[in-house]
Every structure is written in C-alpha cells, then in structure tokens.
Image (tube, rainbow over all chains, first blue to last red; front, top):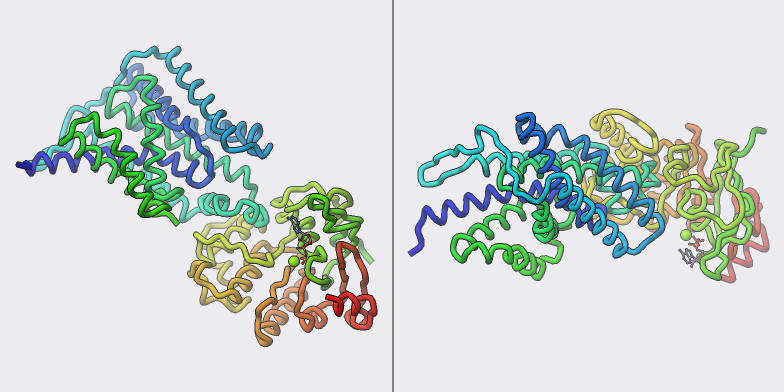
Length: 290
Length: 241
Ligand SMILES: Nc1ncnc2c1ncn2[C@@H]1O[C@H](COP(=O)(O)OP(=O)(O)O)[C@@H](O)[C@H]1O
Ligand SMILES: [Mg+2]
C-alpha cells in the first residue's frame, strides 16, 4: 500500500533538490551547452566554492549565501583566466576537443589535490541558525536546509535566463554559440565574449558550492560524483537552455528522490543516466533543445 | 584626389593547391559605388572574405583609410567601418530580427546605449529597408527574400563606411531590385561607400560608377558600365560561361 504522505514528501524533496541540481549544472549548461567546452572540472569549482564557504562561515560566522554571493566576482575572474589559458594552449591551436578534455582533467586533479592539502579529507559542514528548522505544511515537511538552496537555484536560473535574453553580453554569448565568425563580423570579439561566458559559468559555481555545503557535509572527492549528474542535467535540458536545465534538474531530483524512497538510495545515482538515455532516445536535442 | 578608402594590392589566396586569387588589385574611393562582377567561381566571395578578415591572404596587402589591415581581426575591421553581407545569409536563429540588429549596433557601431534605445534604432533601420513588420519574428520564419533584406539591414546596423554586398539581389523580383537600389543610392548619398557584387546585370550596371571584372582569380577589365558592356574580353568570359 502506497502511503500518500511518503509519496508527497518524496516528490517535494525531489523538487527542492532539483533546484539545487540546477544551480550546480548551470555552469555546464553555459560552458558545455553554449561554448562546446567540456569542462569536466566544473563540479570541482563547485566544491571549491563549498570550501571557501565553509572556511568563511566557520572562522567569521558569515552566512553561506552571502559568501556564495561575494565570491561570484572572484570566481568570474578565475573563470576568465582558465578560459584564456584554455584558449591560448588549445582552442587557438585548433586542438581537438579530446586534448582540451585532458586540460580540464588536469584542472580537476589540481583543484582536488589543493583542497586535500589545504583542508584535509575530513567531512565539513556549515552552520546557520535557520538551517536546522523546517516549514510544516500539513503532511509535507519542508526543511530550510533544502528549501533555501532550491530558492537560490531558481533565482540563479531566472537571473541567467534574463541575462541571456535581455543584455548585449547575453545576446552576444548566444551569438557566439551559433556562429562565432558571423559574430566577429558584427564587431564583437569572440574570445572576449567566450571569456565572459566561461567566467559566468564558473561564477555560478561559487553559489552552487555554498548551497552544496548547506545541504550535506562535503569532502574533496565529492566533486567527482557530480560530474555525471551535471552533464546529464545540461544535456537533458537541451544544451544551452538554462530554463531547460532547471526543468531537467527538477525532473531528475524527483526521479532520484522517488527511487531512493521506494528502491533504496543505491539505485538513485543510476537514475540520472537511465533518464538521460530515455529522453535522448525520444528527443535527441533534449527537453528544450533547439 | 584623396587616397582610396580601400585598396587591395596584389592579393593571392590559395585553397590547397588551387589558386582562388592570383594577384588581385581593387580600389574604391570614398563615396564611390564600385561593381564587382565575374563568372561563378572567379573569386569574388573569396576577395570579400579577405577584405572582411575571414581569410588571410598568402601574399599582398589590404589598406583601409591608409592603414594596413591585412592582419587585423574581423571584429576590429567591423569596428573600423567595414561591413559585409553574406551570399547565404547567416542570421542568429535564436534571436528575433530586431535582436539580430542590436548585435552590430552595440559592437560594430559601438553604439553604447541601453538595449531599448538600440532596439528602437534597429526598428528604424528595418523601416528604411521596408521590413519593419518582421522585427519580432525569428529569422527561421522568413522567406529567402526577407532574409536577404534582413542581412542588408544587419550590416547597416554596423554603421559602415564601406558596405560590401555579396549578391543581395539574387532571387528578388524586378520591383524588389528597384526598391533595394533606391535604398542603396540613398545610403551612398549619405556618404557610405558601396562595393556591389552582383549577377543581376541590370542592377550592377545601373548602380555602379565603376566596375571591376574578375575571372579565375585575376583582374580582366575595369571601367565605367558602358566600357565594360563593350569590352570584348568581358563578353568572351560571359558568353563562354
Ligand atoms: N573555403 C574554400 N575551400 C576551398 N575552395 C574554395 C573555398 N572557398 C572558395 N573556394 C573556391 O575558390 C573559387 C572561388 O570561389 P568564390 O570566391 O566563392 O567565387 P565567386 O564568389 O566569384 O563565385 C571557387 O573555385 C571555389 O570553389
Ligand atoms: Mg560568391
């Protein structure tokens, strides 16, 4: 007999976790979806954001969301530098994408080792007064630990959506993803535009990192567990569509939550790929793909 | 007489072993209307690609307003005032027609205004070309003819000093050709220098002050439309096509 409140709680938890997955995947949606750069190191930037958040929260008592926000400009600059190096050593030389992948593998391990050396391998968590509390809505219980990351994830997606639709830079990024030569003939420097886009992708990682460490304890190797999931969300949503990424993330969140509730947590990590294969079989361009 | 606005000096361009341009010379004076004709495959588009920066010639120089721009990036050439249309239009399909025009307004023309001012400006340009009704459509829904008009509008949005048109008349009806010609004359009167590559002979003969003829990557003739019409070499090339 299926209990209604068990089902309902699983669905709500899935939606909430989905908002968080969106935040983690937005950077991939932009960088892989629009720039065709398979930045597999993205989740490690997220983890870096988590550790920065942990450090500033445990030493100075700063609110995790605030840390995520103030780190965004710094991460933007870091993203710029990473793209410029990638461009200089790979893209400009006309290197094959596979060699670029090696570059990002390098970045991935470099970050992971740096974190291990700096923070060790112990689990870390942040504290904030509201994190232990929850909102009781009848039979559904909504914990702030999940609700706030959901809300921030949705806000981040919305913000990015409007950035792409309503700003010159946003439109130029859409342009560079479609035809970078045509864009250059319109007077925009494609390398600069891609640099900005990559920077924005990495900037979302600082906030996603802050959200991650609010939800669960972090350790350096956690980033690698997210690689599959973030690419699944970006591809499922339709490459380059941030709106699609949010929907895909929520669908995935619900699917994982239901699987964990009814079949056990061990099955849930396989769900993202099962779902991905299923959707791609029916809609190769993803849910919101062009 | 002042220096030419654009000077192409002895430009060579090869594709593998194939010589698409073998020492081409072209110049255009400020405010002039130059026609560039030649049979299919004679190197006209390749020439334009070298001028706009999509291709770098193996040999030769391209001078714009007295500066050597042979190695300059395409986006710097666009900002310097060189805009071109594509023979096969290349719109950004995810954006509306107005949004497409905002890109060169912001970047090539360095308009530096708010998005709403740029969109208003874009609509004015669409009105000038006569496609103001299409502003909010996506390019994928446009007919070939409207797509060409949009391509023209988009290059105007870059506020060019030199406008290079690569077969914008192809597929247009007689009255549409006249319409576009009228616009181009008006733009030229406002001071925009125009190079017109065209297969529609009526258009290019009626529009150009001077015509340059290419064949197999070489200059074969140059002169006024009348001189070109009566040039036996040109006649041979076109009849032999
Ligand atoms: N990217 C390219 N690679 C190889 N060959 C090319 C390329 N672009 C043009 N060509 C060749 O160069 C010649 C000139 O082409 P093009 O400049 O397009 O001629 P036109 O515009 O006068 O018709 C043609 O034979 C064409 O096949
Ligand atoms: Mg051509």
